[in-house]
Length: 291
Image 1 (spheres, helix red, strand yellow):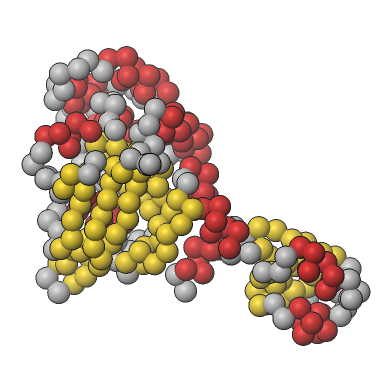
Image 2: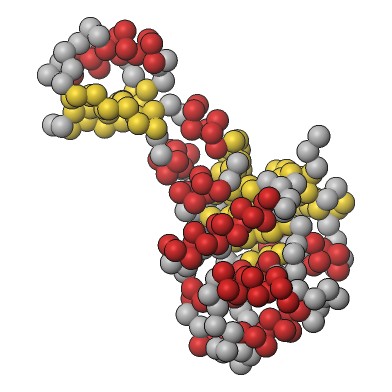
């Protein structure tokens, strides 16, 4: 049986009468990378800040490793690594001074771990925090979240500001963390990276999770694009009975939910010049959820 690491139960946050999140419930198991997806303002950061105890919840419960979370519990600081969407660090410190300061919170020496992360992310420790670019500041935040070898990582838009090469390096680091059993809540609006990293995703809209499932299942259940170029388009539309995604002078694209054998049998009745079948990208599924 999977070990539960994070569980949210009917989590609510209101700012006066203004809704932040409404009845957010989810469970994340040990060693899982869970993608938390939604556009700006959907409630991703509010959910994360509530989990971390940075803002007080209006209702519901947060459980960490089966125990109701207490924001004042120092154990949570030890087992959780957190990367906020916006970093506010001590600008006058150098990167090295900040890392040493962070290290001082823990009894264990994380020197080797720190060396591994700074080399992998190509961080110049001599620079002052206030002189860092957005991307370099984000890399420092990643190190601060990971250096104490947490059991749980909570990452809010972690790759914003990183160049593509550094994004790939960061993803490799996360996959190694997963191998050692780290549980990761990965909040993002970049669908391609979530699709590559995460097993499950939860879609949040207007403060409420509107769908949650395994990525592979979502892809399979949402069918494929079927593009046809033919002089017999009108008959094909009537005969197939599929939903039209788009149509122009270059052909017609259907959203196909037919089994392959059935589709081939039906298409054999028509004069077709070109035929293309492709998986619906996660980005398009995402847009469909938010219409």
